[in-house]
Image (cartoon, rainbow, N blue to C red; front, side, top):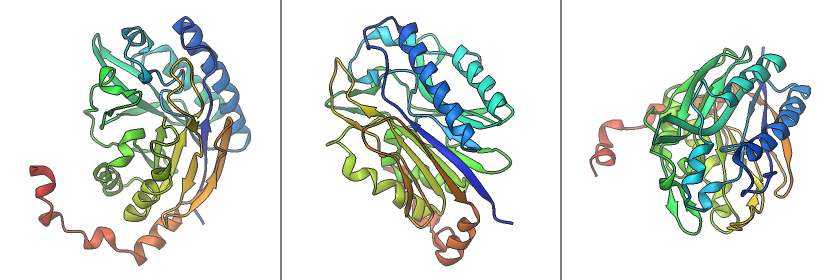
Length: 289
């Protein structure tokens, strides 16, 4: 019997003005996403992933300590607790990226993973932190992740998470494949002109090199007052052959769903024996440089 998993990606524009009270900013995006999560569930999604720090704007366009108050603990903060309720309600696994506080002054860009019963399975912390002009000042806000590259077993699929800038680094993508990930999700926030050319190259290449599916998410819209560029959406699912099998628009909110046949992984890996033929004994220079 084929192992087909229906998944969803949610791309959405920010709602409240960035200079509004932070609780209002967060509440507006939470309410918006509740509707889209219900939409994904109505389409039969078993697993839905939200965009990078989904509950507000991409505030890394500036360097202001005000945004430190946007953090929450995982899993005991209000947003993850609420998302656990939604996962149970809809009987749907959720990947929920938020701004995490571990202790005062120690913050991470993190995605929590919840199963369809609302159980908290664990989290991934963004490993590679950019500090790139114009307007991607992430080292001001986040410590580099320290949890490695965990794979989460949902019963019906084994999944991994990469976050945004991570996608430019193939090493973690390989680690996820070697650890058994069948679908890797990459919630992102990136603008036209900076990385759009790479958007459809790097992640299909990871899918091919590692023989798994990828769900890549990008937000939409231009966010004032920073106006660093257009978040161009174009979220997509990619199969282990590197083919984009479903893609969202570049300029509007959208819930993108796709059926992923996990049996394709074995079929592709029987043809391309990349895991068999790799030579880790020759790769020492990669960790000694």
